[in-house]
Length: 209
Image (cartoon, rainbow, N blue to C red; front, top):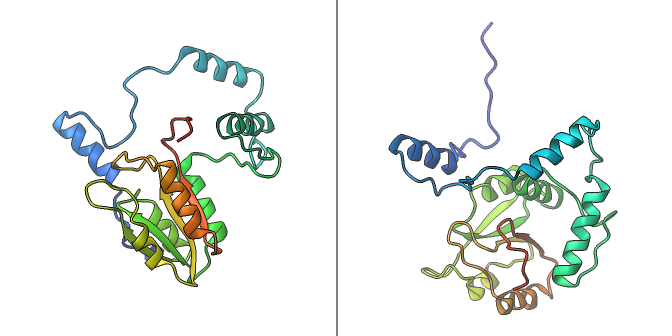
């Protein structure tokens, strides 16, 4: 019998740019700046801690939201850095990396036909994630050369169907970081709306802006 035809829900995704860049770097023996590959060994303390945890039997499925002690640690860090208190039990979820967190968030809040604003250029998982949820991608370019947000264009892109806006600071790929003033300007722009802000801060330094 012939094999069944598999039809992708994302036929236009293709090969991720990170795979392409890593292959080229290997082929040309070049320094790979396309991904965050550390050029140093893992801290032996971390290796020992992981080994000890495994030896103690901590190798089972964790709670769906994450290990309580880890969620408590995240809540403590957020309060220390930003002075904001979040419930470790009901407001913090641990995910298997930032890309999964973004996809999970989008699938949870974006419904078919909802518009989601992305600021381009952007991390290449944003658009497929929105399309997978049935959302409509609304592309707003960042300011050429500086990669800072253009609030006039963002405001013009907002419609009654806008469900969310996805921002990224420090920005991938330019490294541009939003200022406190820009964050406050976005807050003021979104305040009268029901638009959700999804903020990708995977490269955050842990310091306040």
